[in-house]
Amino acid sequence: MHTIELGDVAVTMVPHLDDWSLSPARYFPGGDPGLWEANRSWLSPAHWDADAGRVRAAVQSWLLRSGGRTIIIDTGLAAGAGRPGAPPGASLPAALSAAGVAPTDVDLVICTHLHADHVGGNTRRDAGGGRVPAFPNARYLFSRPDLDFFHPGTLTEEPGRSATVYAESIEPILRAGQALIWDERHVIDENLELTLAPGHTPGHGVLTLTSGGDRAVFVGDLLHAPVQLLAPEVSSCFCHDPAGAARTRRQVLEWAADHTALVIPAHFGGARALEVERNGSAFAPRRWAGFSDTAPAP
Image (cartoon, rainbow, N blue to C red):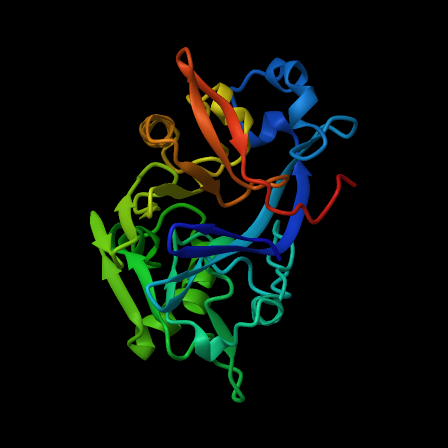
């Protein structure tokens, strides 16, 4: 696994799996398909299988060591879940073990939002077949707007699937008393701060890292593929509020461009993260971070 140092914070990419199931038209409704071909030289093959016409969606967690604590950003899909329309996840404990981290070592789990591919590793099955927190010593950060939105008693979008996710990945954390619920803004330590960045979900959060002159922003699902730098107004088919997501995306990218901050999305393949620069009303890659790639196009 590849680790980079940003000031006093060590950042390790923890890969789970790669999915190539969606075409650009399905992934990004209303987008310009010509953008992909016009930028084939750098979008393919790391982010787009041009021959098959499929976009790469990497599922990964980020492991941070900051202020003496071990922190995980998002826990991926549930291992072997096999939910309709979603591939089974990898074993997060096994992936963390490769980085020298045991479940008991984790102090904090940050859930950027409550979609299945970001909370599936929150829990594990106990001896009785029930679900308990996968990280017994950790606090789990959930935003209040997402908890309210995805609660099975009020949810109207995909209620069946989301209710299962809530029951398996959220309720056991709440029941165990390990949830730390935040809203608007939450300071984690001298290096890390969470802020709401709504649109993809009502309570989607971004994590800003500022340490020793280095800056980074973990943007979760504000960006699903690099083509959105070229057309930041285009949101993915998974965004609950596409227009709101586009507004937030532009705000975060403007800040990143102006502050030379590393942008670290949840689902990029290839080098995984990059610095961006303004390009008229859009943005462009300035410098890629160079995290190790793990899977070529099929």
